[in-house]
Length: 138
Picture 1 (cartoon, rainbow, N blue to C red):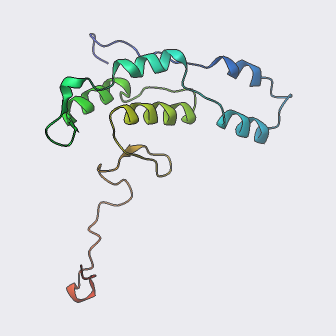
Picture 2: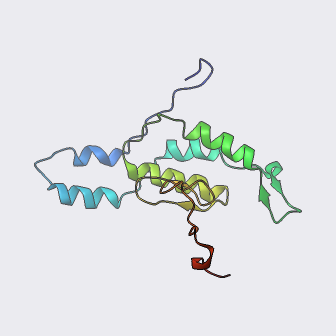
């Protein structure tokens, strides 16, 4: 990170300590119970609230379109490369809160969270059949 940036805080919910006793719960019980919990702590939600859109970045004349450059900048600050979250559930909830505030549809195929209009991680090849006679007609 650059010298001007602030190190992201690791927000660990209070309920995690309750489930640290491995002998008390089976791994499956722990997985199911922890997956149902709210991982977005007050501190994390406060950090997200600082990164949401402001009214000046919404184009009222163009169907309430958001400033894409500002969205990308704020997303890069909130989710920098290498930032650590205590669970994938917290990351998913943080991304959901952030995207909802910006009116962005989040996709979640497997272990990847991305914008619906972003580049697909599944394939970089063209999906059109090489033989034009075998392509679907629109």
